[in-house]
Length: 259
Image (cartoon, rainbow, N blue to C red; front, side, top):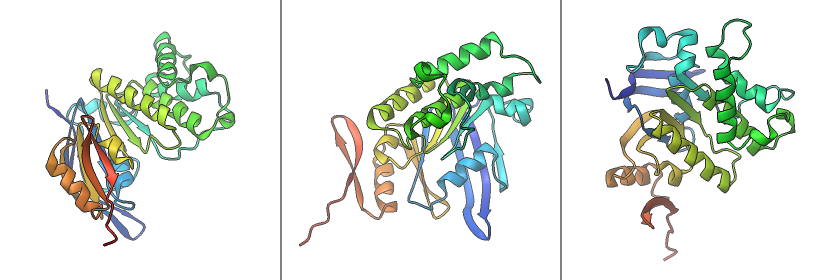
C-alpha cells in the first residue's frame, strides 16, 4: 500500500487576477501529521482549499490511498474532512446537530441517523469536550466553543484524511493542548492530518513541515531536521529562531541587539 496520502502535481491557483500558487509539487505522507506554515499571504489556506477541492486550480491532485470510487463526490466526502477558517454555521442549530452534519456523507437521502452515526457524533463531541453543552445553540457559544463544535463535526466524519485551516483560532492554551492530544489520537488511529498553522512551535510538534512563501514551496522536511529549522528562520527573515527547550523544538522571537 502506498505511503502517499496526497500527490500534488504542477498546481497553480489564482484569486481574481493574482497568482497565489505557482507550480506546486508535493507528496504528503499518509498516517502522519503534516503542517503547512509560512508568512501571511504565502498561499497556505489556498493550498489547503485546493486539496479539499473547494477552489478551481490548474494541475493535478491525486489521492493514492483512495480507490477511484472513493475520490469522487459523496464518497470523497466520507474520506476527506474539512475544518475551515472562520466557518459560518446556522446559529440556531444545536451543537449536537452541527456535529451530526459531519455524518451526511454516510447517510441515505432522508434517512434517520443510524446507530453508527449517533456513536460517531457522541465520540466526536466527547473528544472535543463539547458533550456537556451539546444542546446549546451555535449562536450561544464563545469563539473557542464554536471552534470546538466545528472540530467535532470534522471528527464525526471519521475520514481518513483531515484538512484543518487554522484550527487553533480562538482556542485558549488549555484547549490548544486538548487539540494537540486529539491530533495525536487521530494519528495513532492511522488517520492523516494536514493543518495550516500560524503557531510555529505547535507546528514543530508535528511530523513534517511544508514551508510556503509567495505561493511556492520553499522546503519540505521533518519537523526535527535542522535543515527545516534553518529554512523556517530564513523564510521568516530571521525574526524568529528555533531552539530546543526541554526536549522540544520551539520558535522564539529573535532578539536583535541595539548595538
